[in-house]
Image 1 (tube, rainbow, N blue to C red):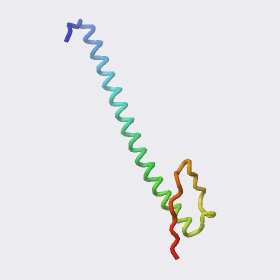
Image 2: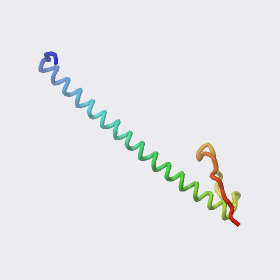
Image 3: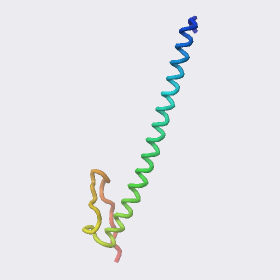
Length: 81
């Protein structure tokens, strides 16, 4: 390591502390984003299952609109007789 003055060492310590804090912030945001993605996927799966059951029992005209750009392709609906 090169010879640093006391002022440079103090500045470097401050920079390293800020970098560590920013790294923790980025990691926390990434963790929160991953958890939100998991919650969204679980909610989408539940919605699709409930929507399909509603369509099976009451018909698509009585179910909320399926918005493919938001939900993806409609789930397959098996009608049992």
